[in-house]
Length: 220
Image 1 (cartoon, rainbow, N blue to C red):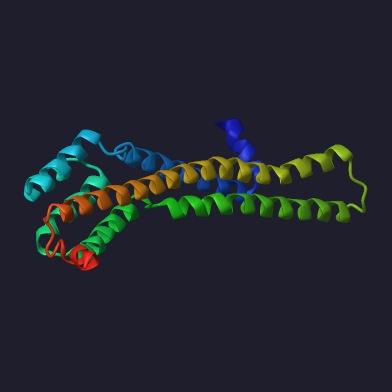
Image 2 (cartoon, rainbow, N blue to C red; image 1 turned 135 degrees about the horizontal axis):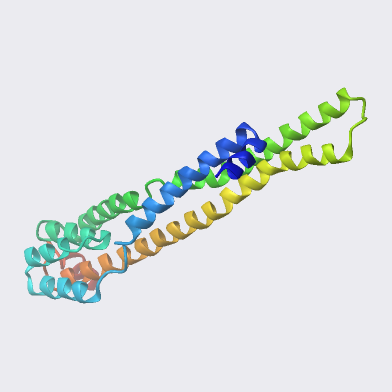
């Protein structure tokens, strides 16, 4: 730890700022990984049971079954089933979209901060390198250009250290952000597919308010 602290000290104040970004990114990544552990693909058996009860007209039972699953997909389906008996398809689709949006916002929590760290960390590293190089050349100028090559090389590698630290933080942070964002995109696709299938089933079974009205109009 002492050697690591000494290395950060050589990188200057911006080195400690980059280290702080690393700590924040790690904390966010661990917290989001814990959250996404429960966000797996919906249980096929559970989804089949929900659709089966809804088709029989047991909307309350289907909603209760959906609420038992701690999953954003189940939460959105439960919201749809709770309103199915008193609204038409268009209004229900809007309600489901709003419920799904709330669930997605919870999953995307802190992801913008993770993306910000991934973008800012290498810039901080570059800034540290530039300021370090400026100081090194100022020292050369003050000594009239009579500087030992080893001393000059030492100043340069210390200046470049912040860039290495910034990239070392940015690369894994970018990977983590993209991985979490991909999980969110997969979930959104699942939400659309399952919600659409459930609404089709409810409409075909006549469980929606005015459920057949627009189909009859189309047939006419």
